[in-house]
Length: 460
Image (cartoon, rainbow, N blue to C red):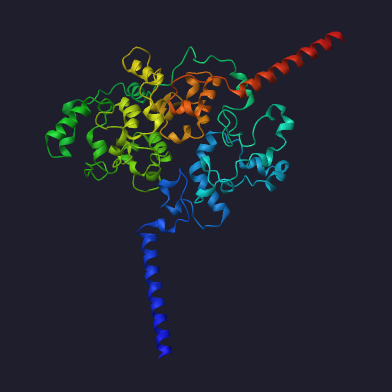
């Protein structure tokens, strides 16, 4: 009897094991993969946390494949930032001893996923004094640093581990004593359509009668209205007809623009690639469904929770409106303190003046002016759709954004004031920054030494 009872428990155990295996297998390949997450993912990766293969390309333990997975997404940003702590710095034999303190050749040394209990700003999982591991003699090398706390190195306006494009001493010296507001303040103005017209001067804009919507959709009042909008848009001026976006290679109708990002890429490749690399489009870049506003970790308007983030979320393809894309689309979703305080700010006033023609185009400041800045390559000026390049740390905004209109010290001090940022840069603040006072001191010391050497030579 006991033998059969034990056999029954055995069969029961096998049954339970099979059920659990089936449940886990189903969720691994078809269902909810969150069952397998060892902990919450960081703010920058939570959108793709179900795409395990994006990071774990070969194994969960092997270092080099994981490193390559990190670089597959972040190498371009590090290159643009002229990474100040690249791998080659630590493979240099002269710095070999530093690796004993911190193996900075691997991203996961500082950034470990699924460990929320030790994760700080920018996804860093090391203690706040990690700079001290290699720079413990800095107070001796630079006495001006004695007064600073060990965990203040990365404060805005001082040092950023990967990106010091606007914070190294020679650059500070070059831009010291610049006015708070520059005389010539202006951001670049996108010129894609004007360049196209110049290159295709023989082609006239498409007219209302030249649309090919009839071959794609059944006639209706809605289609007539959309065609009217199209006829007044930049697409019609650039000879982009309805079928250019709504018909695939087989001539089949894609009326709901289900393939819209790919359709947009045909003409806007640079913008589409940037979009897929940024927080808005990274799910599409990972071949996942588009991100929903409700999945964001920042405060968003409940009325926008159902929206998916694709090209047409900000750009109506039938009547592209840059004002809507640069401002209204942003404020229609974002409900955080910084965004809500834009209305009524000095930047908002300038933007209204630009729209009303009171100041030159490019002198106004919208959401996109700062978070999706204009960049120039050759003669082309385009909007950088990878907004991650100018987000965190906020010092990354100094060169591509703030210094278009403001002096470096004023900009650095503004970005170092977290309360000012929440107020969307409205109100008074201390426009001086200690980094520049140290530079002024060093310049004065150099000037005195130069004068002393000059006197010594004169006395010889």
